[in-house]
Image 1 (cartoon, rainbow, N blue to C red):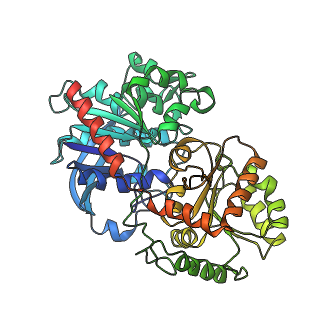
Image 2 (image 1 turned 90 degrees about the vertical axis):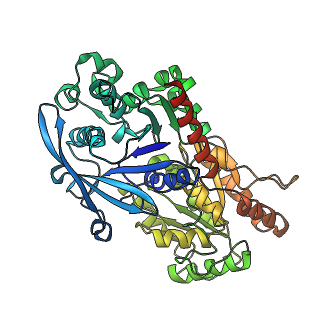
Image 3 (image 1 turned 90 degrees about the horizontal axis):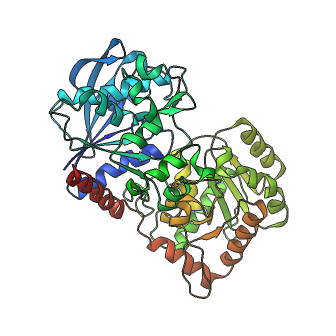
Length: 476
């Protein structure tokens, strides 16, 4: 079984969100179940020099982008046993950042076409092309439109994974012919209010579609979560699977993590040493018996921050808790949390920055981890929190619903605390309920034991992907 992952980002080379974590970890898990898996990415300017210096030049070719041909270099590096290829073009990718340019439609049209073109020059011919999110979503359509006549490509099958349906890659109609080189017979498969929708192409032309949790696979077939594609996704329900993401449990391991203050396995006293050290580092009063609530998040509306801003003053004024927030995002939220720290300097630390090292310290130090998301396709934060014994308080949506189960004091089952409605006071009630159990050691030991006992690795999910690959190849 040979599988090529095509994506826009992958840890540790380039990362803006959870997609990079998936592309960094899932191939290693698939390799563990016998798949020869490789990854292909754009070669961005921002990739650290320590990786660039290790890259081996594999090939150079011309890639058609509509009526023009563009240079494409292929570089390769072996990382953690996984071959990773990089599409090199200074004009498209030699820029600061990854997304957000006016010509993103052209940049990623080039990337999609380059992935297919380079297969003739690589020493690797995949059985399955596994494409991730809108940035690689037109590969299945280009395969159908330009390459099926070639015996090299005739038997390749495609899987398309939706990591976040909100971001679809919508561009003007002219992209179809001028950049992708396809005629109007393909327009129906990408049409979105007169424009070209890359995400739609992946859904229409792939042999199988996956998304990152069973609950999210159901949610995106409704109007509220479907963002205009719910009808199409419903029509392909038989070829749609929800598979929960995992985390790299070797990298994220409180027993060996070099980034945290004190390493531990399940010892809550050792974990508490991390809380004391974080309180000291952030200038909060050292108070090991006060529950520490944390958020590590992008500061955007979809993360439920409007719920938090409505009730945080009440929580901090009346409740004996401390709160730590880490993240960057919308200026209005950055400003709000900075001002809130000024109002509650002994209870709130707002760290408006991006820091992997600090995030790990927060996972290890915090007692409770808040994720009141409006929607959450899978979520990585709650899995990391569980791994480090920080108990999640989450809204029952997407992958949060699949991975966090509300604690039942009668049976001792459950690894967190949950609420259903998108309501600030429901969130506050649930957080206060969690705090009440923090002060009941017999219950807190049970819920943290359940959290530590969970399997948050990619092992089960990798086998589910393997089953899908086998199924679509048998159908060919």
